[in-house]
Amino acid sequence: MSSRLVFVNNSRETFTPTHSGAIATCIRSVSERALLDGVRPTIITRAHSSVSQTVPWGSTVVLPAIPPPRSGLAGNVDRAGRRLTGWARPDQRSYAKEVARVLQGEALDSVVLSNDPELAVYLRRRFPTVRVVHWFHNLEVSSDRFRRMYAADSGIISMAVSAYLARAVEQVYRLTPGRVQVNLNGVDVARFVGAERPERVPVIGFVGRIAVEKGVDVLLDAATLISDRGIAFSLQVTGDTNWGERHGNSYLDSIEARITSLRARGVTVNTLGHVTHAELPAALAASDIHVLPSRWDEPCALALLEGMASGQPVVASATGGSPEILAGSGALFSREDPCALAGDLERLLRDPGLRRRRGVDALVRARELTWQATWQRLDALLKGNSR
Image (cartoon, rainbow, N blue to C red; front, side, top):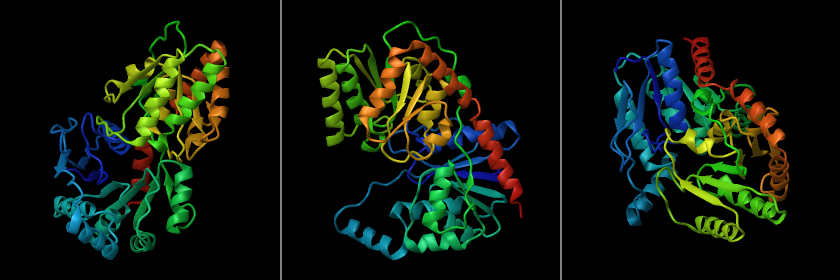
């Protein structure tokens, strides 16, 4: 491994064309920009149990697939071990050992980790001369033991994908205010902008996992309210319960029941299911209003950035980092409030001029939030903290 900069993917994520989450997308996008600057990073990642190929990359180290959780007596032993050692999961500890094995004996400057504070502590102790950067993409809460060790180690450089998340991490880990640096996610605007939207009944679009925290039900309830007002529109729901996989559950049942009810009212609802990285721009081009109805505190949602980059007006719940990402370029509504969402959507549906103006506002803001800027902030942070 010749690289002097290593990105370690989250121990729960994989790195493939179809089974990659936001963290893997961030690593891939930032690494591509680093290559343009002459930096050739190595990516260490998990394999996926059902997908053999990885994203084409010049330097990727693929570790064993994530083992399924054990049950019965073995599962009880695993839980007891987690309580004793503080590791979040047994496979996280094994992943840490595999990563350390790969790094052993290599001459490298920096290791960038994502959402694995336990792994950050572990690698700092194993490789005290290596610069360890931990990038919070969500509020990862460690055991008390690991939180104390993380806070005590001033050599760990901490970043977060939004100011909202940075301040939350500082509070939870009891870090000095300002210790966590902000490095926003980015978006490749050129991938999404430019598609001409034909004259049609406006399409309200959602992109994301079909999960309770993503608030798809809030959007569908708002759509029901709008349909009662006699406004013409259709819906497009893009995503599934997981990346390329569908797992039945009661929440999915409730979403399908709402969709059935809307169709019975005469509302067209297109469900695209999971789409790949390459297919996403076309999916976004098929909608006219982009909605992020999350009920959890989205730190810096890629789906929000991608909707903005596609030149659509954006409506998002006022949660987490979304207000700072939009920065006035879209509408915000109170989480879990379908009435408020319906009001914002009704204004956009009734006024084509407002849709166009808001779409331009969103695109202008998206152009400020590039992956190149994300890489430059990371690069500057690494150089500014050189040993």
